[in-house]
Length: 206
Length: 222
Image (tube, rainbow over all chains, first blue to last red; front, side, top):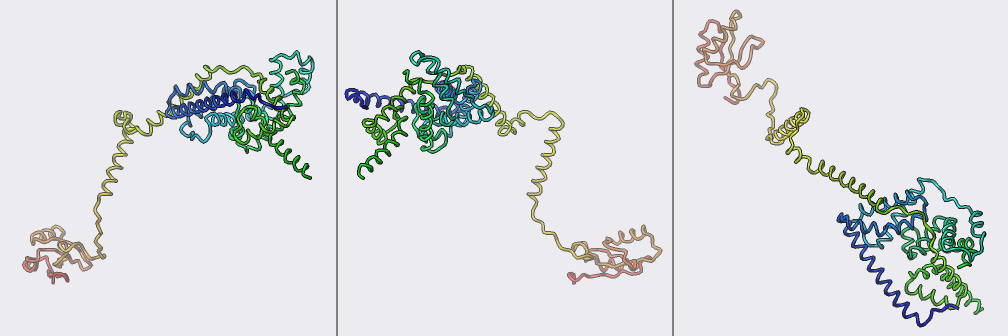
């Protein structure tokens, strides 16, 4: 039976409010940075670059395993931010704007490379089936989840990645991927089905 | 019948919640959607299990490859930005300050001087053409002669043996000027001041080389 402890409800609401306030503050700071970048402020650009670099690495790592390509896509993305900062009109979050640029740049790079992700289902089954679930370490679990994500379609993987590991809402994801909101929800629904099958044994150990 | 309808409604809510559940996990739902999911989770064991599974999946963040070095990557991008800015400055300098640069650093090669000279000539011609007053050309029929001042008023003919030198001497001595001739009858049209016309004609008639000296009045002079 689902229940949130009553005693914790007030605490949860307060935590949510604080999180929303922190998120709003962060967004305001991002907007200010972009405004300064539009005026060719290199210090602001440095700050924004270092702030988004790890987030973009995590995002792009799920799209391509090539470290050089990840660096190239990040620099291409943030070069656009430097050049086009004056065109940012605040109709979406700064992060949504930057991620949507990165997504398009990454798709182009992957298309040029023409390297389909190779995933060995048999090897994956063997790796996860060799030892009892209880013996799987956190690192192994992460590896299994990573491989399962590689096994689903790139579109589904991007939705899963942006939702669970970047905490984005479905509207932001729809903007980034330039598709309808319902498409995002449907991709996520099917992705969960695939992941449940692939990770059925692994997840029991958690 | 009623039970079936209630089940159908519940199925719809369940489907809705199933699609919204991931964003309930990451706490990005708002208002009605959040309330809908929260309410449904109290009564649906399937969604409760799914919620728990997704929380576990979220907690196990997938491993990542070696991340690129942020300092090195930023240094590369700075080089690109600096190169782009330098190009922009060069282009601006060529476009916006080209003439100032040219004036402050006069050209040295002959080609540049030649180009400058041609430009100056073109500029002068343009000024002359543009500033020239409208000058409606006077229409003159063929044979109508020059202006009124140049019109002949005395017809003279000479003996055939008269030399050119003698002819000029006679005309000059009479204070006349040849304005046309010789005609097909070897006559010349002279122009003399109107007040001396009769006297000049009489003088010429007395010369042995002259066979005819006849004053001639144009229509305007009559």
